[in-house]
Image: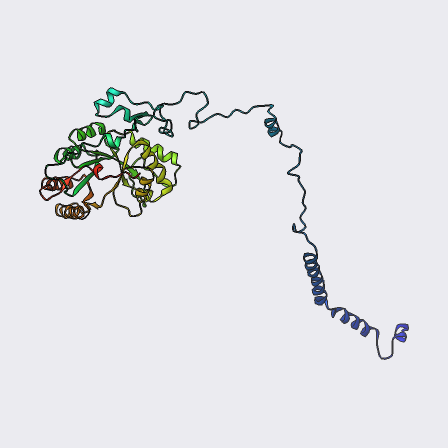
Length: 392
């Protein structure tokens, strides 16, 4: 009753408690939270604007990289000469004092004619080869220029015998490719084709030395086919030891020497495929330089318009020629005769022309038929080296 007497007039105690509870429930809690978040965000922005700290507050430690204090004891030991480190040479780096190999896959030409050891004279002569033009290597006997400057291109070119009455006549050279893979087809080509036809041997057949010896004995000039990377490699694969783009020059030269050592007596090489490789100056350059140093010629089969062979041959004094027509893209008698007729037209217009044809039986038979009357039509059939020119 005393409480009721002390309460303001018109208000009871229970009503006052209800009003206090309602006031507490109506506090602006959302506004207070939003205000606190705004204060935090404002503090972060202020730090970014006014504090220059590129590390974002991360702990850092200064390390004196140019300090005179030597933290590497091994480096200090080596630099003061207190100890010596021994480096063991691999097979590609000759150890000082070690016996030099007679011929290395990496440097067969770099040693010079005096250090290069020729093959056995009796063995070379039995194959109709010039001993001074061969160098013994781990890949076999590979061609080289002699100490007197004689080259395989000059030595192995057959004597040019001009048929009577052929002076001034347009000259035609035809190269048969892919020989040596089939012994029957190879012997057929050697026996049925006249000596003026040049024969190109692949490096994969058996008995290559004997087959090449027979070809040269029959008066044929010989080329070696070198497998080079085409654009669709490895879908189109020229064969083992294909020279590839993007490889170290040493690796490609090692493959080249492997191919060069398959047989001897050739005046030069012709590409087998190789549209990608022959378009790359970086990859093809060292190969052409090696051919020039060894006195070999290079015949481009004309299959790629992007080939840089002619420019590289000129830069390395390599005797060079380029075929103008592939004669048996359609391997049938009449299409081949039509292409040979077109080759005659090129020769008449330019004074000379070079064609290439594969060793298919129909191709060999048709070429033999055509060659029997080519002189009667006013043309001279010559080895391809006659039409390969050396830029100096």
